[in-house]
Length: 240
Ligand SMILES: [Zn+2]
Image (cartoon, rainbow, N blue to C red; front, side, top):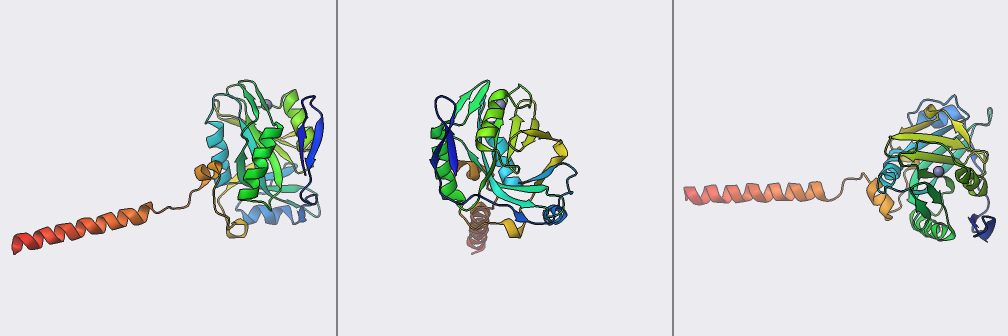
């Protein structure tokens, strides 16, 4: 379900395209260990795949005004403690949001763009949260940010990240009431096989995020081989 704010600031339903997401049950310690992370003593563990982390920071540093986007991924819930592990695997930059030096707000146009990018990139993954920047303002949740969190990210496993790309700071907030988590609650991991997805990386955000080796090494090898052949040919000519 995707909601959007009307001009009056009231949430309005745009469409409903999937049943509500329900986290799968899994011990939090297992979810952390699988990713090579420390179990979190905080109310939740926010595990961010390195490619998504890099894409988020690259987008944050791309503009002097406030920018943002949404986080896609998966969520598990510990059957004993009820604590969530939020696995952020993809970042989708929001185009068409209201952006200024002190303001970021997701508009219907931004949601439209996000829906399209998500359909291309990871249509099966739920939106687990959002992130936006506070360039040189420090990391906190403003009244607008709290309203955004309540309107769109009110699930107990929804996260809101604030990045200050100038001061190099980050804060993470959890749930509809935007409770700030200690910084240890957010940890970055390298991709591991069970969350790898075969989808082609196509969005601008993911081009930044992609760390897969491209054709460059093969081209370099071909060039080296050609050079070697040329030298060999020259030597032979000299001798002959
Ligand atoms: Zn803000």
